[in-house]
Image (cartoon, rainbow, N blue to C red):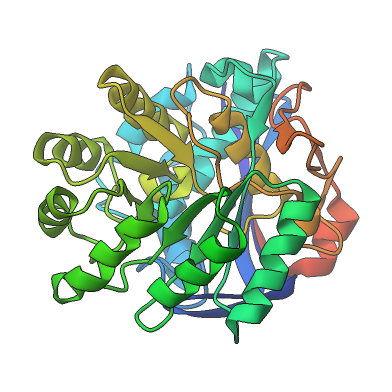
Length: 368
């Protein structure tokens, strides 16, 4: 397939409600939407960068720069047998996985459409529904948090994840467990703690959590290995796993027992599949993380979550969890059993609503 055109859009959408983590609050969610034309088909993907370097050093501005000045010139006009060739094309660029992933994942959409197959099938997916989890941000009060949890449980989400930070952790979890002793519950620290907080983290062992996600530094493997030996609850790594090599090192030194795979964080589907296969071969499970994506990014995440070895509920909620109106149709909906259907149409399996997309577009540029 020959890459004939690449289009970039900075898109900004307003969340239905503010989302707070240990590193800040989000209400207006930016991203870069990538459209690629290969031969006679178009593929779509999403780069879930923010305006500031909070979750990652990559931002809207840095991603646009890396795409425009390096990735796009190296990609346009190329003949590719498969998107698996793309990581080698851009391997000379250190880091900037989100920018790379936007192009790689759009190429996967093109590749699937050229074969008239759904994306999940060409990625190696094995299920037609994926188990959905919901992530709940930090709230002003515990009572407000409990009300939100009840609403999400009433909607049918089988797994609840809450964000924690120092001062919003053990007492909050204790209250949740009093109200809901049997729900599937996990916590996500987004790297808010250090080993000086060991006693606090140990106390979380008392509450039968599914896992503690990224408690320590966003680049760390060593301290997590030490911590995992001192607590019973499974550690899940997110920000620390940026490539297959990180996942291998984390396994070898026992940094965690679970990995959250965000395809944007690791550079796309090719590396995501490598991590999933490695972790599965060693008898351990993964799940697919979310980054407040629109339906375009969500479609890619759903396809990836259909892979074998994805044994935990993924952070892939229904479209109406985030948006008054998504930019794809059909929107992603939660089934009564807490699952989301995997699209069966060619490519990502949903149609981009270009008029709706245009409403949220802040900048656009086409490269031929």
